[in-house]
Amino acid sequence: MPDRAAGDLEGQIYRGLRDRILSGQMAATQRLPSTRAMAMALGVARSTVVHAYDRLKAEGYLDGRPGSATVVAAIAPAPAPAPRRAPSPVPVTAGAGGEAPPRLYAPGMPDLASFPHADWAACLKAGARSFRTSDLGYAETTGLAALRQAIIDHVSVTRGVSATADQVLILPSTRAAIDLLATVLLTGRGAGREDVVWLEEPGYPAARAVFAAAGARLAPVPCDAAGIDVAAALATGQPAPRIIYTTPSHQYPTGVTMTLPRRLALLEVARSAGAIVIEDDYDSEFHYGAHPIAALQGIDRSDVVVYLGTFSKTLAPGLRVAYMIVPQRLWAPVSTAFRRRGAAVSGHIQAGLARFMRDGRLRAHLRRMTPVYGARMRATADALRRHCGPVLDLGDGEDGLQRATWFRDPACPDVAIAGRLAAQGFGMQPMSGFFLGPPRPGLLFGIAAVDPARIDADAARIMGCCGPR
Image (cartoon, rainbow, N blue to C red; front, top):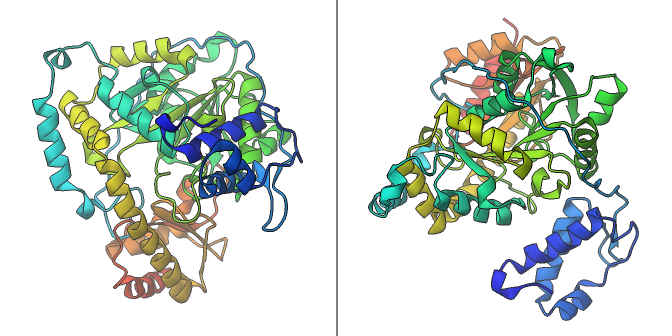
């Protein structure tokens, strides 16, 4: 029975059914009670059960159409945990890169003009006043307890993450988190096994640069409309990985969402290879359609997933606050390596952010901005179809803060076109730069700060730069 005192009855029903399906307690094709019967049995509103069932259908756990019975989908259950060898840390130093100033349609940035300055200032002031003497010392180098708990409270409800506050580490950026994990998990070729990192293709160039600087062998794994395809990597003989880096909720840069069968296959490959999955959940808060699919970490039963989150997209990159949620078995080596580096986030910023989250101001900001970003995403897509349709195809991803497009001509020089656009004040990135192997040309558009009133004029100018020269 759901625990009413714990709240989130829909989430409790969703997680309970999901976990029983993944553990094999509910077999494929097993029929579920009707939403009315389930609601009566659990003593909750029927709408609560309807929403829980809809989430499970959207994520691929249940099958059913209006007017027909709802049954368990035919998926493989998650594997049981297996004995694992412990990774050996080696020191690695990665270079730091600067960020280009924001330009029109530049991806990777929220709308900084909509930053909640008054709320943030109030929380910083209140956080500073409540700062304890002990908070000024070195006792909580891995992060203030209040912020770590606030993060867990947030992601457990919004992302389906299953963890406790003592698994959270606060860092200045996800790039710093990836670099730290590379330090801990990549042991070097002298250890008798090559350090191989599987990366999405196309994928995030900053992650690629960090792993390359750590001396890893980079193995591109193709992504399609269903996300990273580990079966294709196995079929082409890619060597077993130590790390698999992935962005399953909004694949970067294509924006597609990884399907449940692909998620289960990824977890099984990681478990059998003794690899760690780095799940970069960089902007999953911004979902404009149905209920967002929960994080990969929430269905991990073998402790192979490290979950990364950031406030750079929800609030502003200038805050310099990100976090990772680490399996308990990796906490000691990861936290020890972090303390050696001393790259902690300001305690006053952490205290202010903890209060910002605890007071519900982050949730309020997300509720305010999600429909705004959704409208800007739709306006951008519509304008590009109208004006640039002869040369550009829109990618499948429709959520998040960026939209991928592909040139219809596979020989189109997207780097040169991006240069022409930059001279006009635009900041789109060429898609070819996201590939390790043979590239596919296109442009990646940021949608967070677009002005719907001028999008048609902008799209016409963009089309003018895409023609032959």
